[in-house]
Image (cartoon, rainbow, N blue to C red; front, side, top):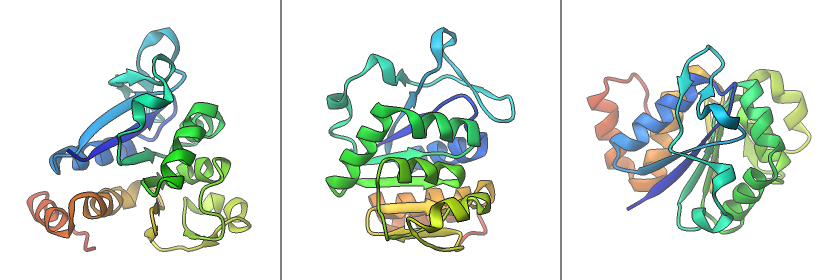
Length: 191
């Protein structure tokens, strides 16, 4: 079964996180939600106050626990993206996935974690517009809603979350599954 890790931290953007997890699971992708630096409370308080309980905590795992996964996703939300960007283990997982030609995906502010993990220098990428200047010196920056360059997938923000998630499904399990989900969910998105 195709599998994905979706990271979450305090300050993660709810829509970007939830839409990605939901759409991947609708496509029968095994999704493991991994909380990062959540402390003793056991949940992430997202950017709009929604509380989400992860499946596991990064701190209770080892790098080997993630070796068989096919995709790693970093959602946006500035505070959450900064936590994920600054976490050494998250960066190691992302770098390992990228180097092994596994899919790595970043949406909104999450793209700052890609740069911090030294992923894809010179490749085409996008982010939330506020990060264009910071990322333009590292990436061939695009303002497209979703950008795919090899195994690197990036997207702009909450309004692009469905297209981003459907693109991930298309890359992981095929265009047919993505198109079927698009019709079932009545999304106005086209790939």
